Length: 323
Ligand code: UT7
View 1 (cartoon, rainbow, N blue to C red):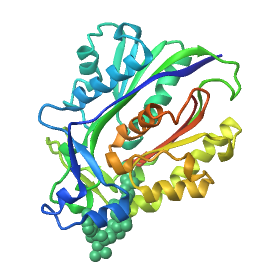
View 2 (cartoon, helix red, strand yellow):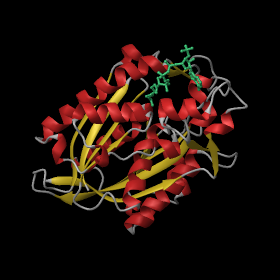
View 3 (cartoon, protein in one colour):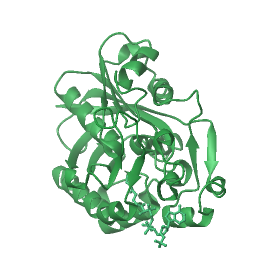
């Protein structure tokens, strides 16, 4: 059977780093509050010349270099983002053009923080359906552009960045010993749409709007939703937490990551944490964390890796991959 095998990873971060202490003169907050409640210590913030397209392009180029491929080898680009360069065309098409790729096709995927997990699941279906052989899945965000910088309950939480993976069609035997995407489970529930949203849009206000979040409400639902979808993925694959080599969760809050890992019985040393360095980069958070753990040698060929995300909508999902 066809499997979607990871061929390369890459990442890109804006030049400017903003530390927690840099907020202290802007809103009533402290390094101590942010670090204790979230685990965040710093985040990268895009400069005027850095956009979702430019960061996405840089992450894509890094993933291509890591895989030893060129844009000519790619036939589909799936870009997960909630902060596109323009309302349309899709920023994926802009990245396609920046890469000098004039064949194949490209589209954006909008599932907020779950976008990358949705993107990998979608790419896997295109590959297994025979519609694509090599797919660039990118998560790229510039949430700094939609933050209300006077709202201390949200502006300290988010950062900008991009990560990318290349999935390639490979042969598998249909067991969980295969390399590639082994199982996936996606969910959404719009009952929760007003708990984390942007208060503007083309069809309503005609403006871009700002991010609004009832943080405590999101927190309350996060751990249960994350663990449910992971258990569904485990049961699809017939595995348990003990079989995992690495858990690469969405990086929103260290307390949510710790509580989810504990509830699932995943040992602390198997959890990849980058929220301290990047903050919450929405759809970019999982591929950024992945590329850090691949680059530093933790995630190796043959490892069983669990990806997970939860965010606005609510949307949530998990993907199990043998590296
Ligand atoms: O990526 C999508 C998913 N998003 C998430 O997963 C975010 C989920 N939510 C969270 O991570 C947490 O709820 C937050 C980090 C947003 C907030 O942490 P919390 O422990 O739930 O705090 P809280 O909202 O209950 O607020 C506690 C206090 C409040 O003051 P009072 O009402 O107790 O007087 C807030 O006004 O902390 C106050 N507060 C702050 N204080 C200093 C809120 N933001 C700040 C701040 N600095 N930046």
